[in-house]
Image (tube, rainbow, N blue to C red; front, side, top):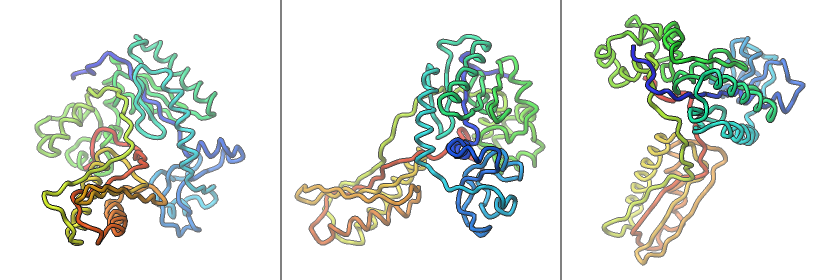
Length: 361
């Protein structure tokens, strides 16, 4: 087996049941009760889903992404609360500022989790363990919330480790412990191997990480394509990704300048829809939702205008981009010929990245 290729020490910090924990912090009388954050259950007839729930609620079998109607059937006496994203985002921002103080390199990957590379200042795992405890204590002291931390040679092992002893956990995996830590685990512990891929692996007799680590790579490629290589590497504790700060993306847009000016409404709509597809593709690649849609219009005499509309809630729906762009364009129809049209989105919100490496099959 090839071990992890980096000597740096990586931490993965994951807040415990973040939304519901924030709600309990704000309402101490809820402590110890099953709390479910998500859509209105409407007495068991609601059509939304659970965003997250407290550990007390999980004892009833409730979990994230479960239909809210099923959650209500499992535990009608639970406290059901709506999502308060503004509160969670503000709390997240404060937590991330705390985490940044302890990192040589920092990467936030969702509202409630981040990677820290501490390899410049910390050289051994005893010091890293002490630092992880300090981080946990500081988050609790400043925000009144617990988090779980994984300490390991790279990102994938750290992420798996942070999930091992929740809530309020601390799991340390030294380089010489990688095999004994990973191999007994179910393959579903590897980020990206989900409810679709796991059964396919079981069909070929692979249920544990150790079995996946020892599988013939060419056979995996024949069944899963290039992801067969990636899965095998992760199972062997190999992850070359660095902890890397993400560039802040404020907007995504594209535009088209025409060889000949256009004015035909059907052609204009076709162009706007094509631009919407390009913007949506970029959105999905960068894993964002948007709230504002904008258009840019340049007439044949170079007069240039922009218009925008903000939606009630964030979405990543492609048709919404096209629909709003076409509606915004109505103001300019019949006013002349166009040499350029553009479509963009802004007020972006990053989609929670629970699967950081593979795209599930």
